[in-house]
Length: 113
Length: 110
Image (tube, rainbow over all chains, first blue to last red):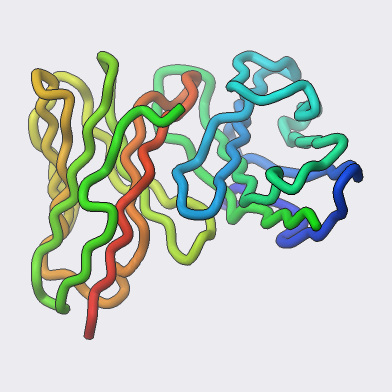
């Protein structure tokens, strides 16, 4: 049973560029959430996708956008990268309701120079 | 914003000792979860305790919850070097966003 997978593992970009991160949920899960974790901090919720729609959104600017595909996989896009966007980006999958555990992927380490 | 704070921020113990980490949160909850993170990688779910439970065990882990004080504790008994990691409490989950604290960095020395 494959767990949550994310790609790429590491990414280096320069300010102003755009980046796309990808996530495949755990088998049987249809809800995907994205989190940003700055160094030394706990993860911060970016948004959650269910049935190909953004269901909830955290306190992140519109430069952060996402998408969910019919196979439940998801993308996180960040435009006009800032130095402060450097972080570990975590994807988590879960069932839509009734079960609270979220299962996390290994993360994508984004460095913005 | 962070839901609350873990205490202590860092903890260093010897193998075989017990490690206790505390977590406080701000709002009413349905459940509280604890996660482990090794070396800045993905989080691993450890245990979930529901708001109507006071204590829960899983192997060497014991979690308590005091909703009147809005606090929880995670006890790891007979710690091992492999327990070295950061530990986070989080409220929410499932269809709700997880709201994490800043974590406790545990170092278990062999």
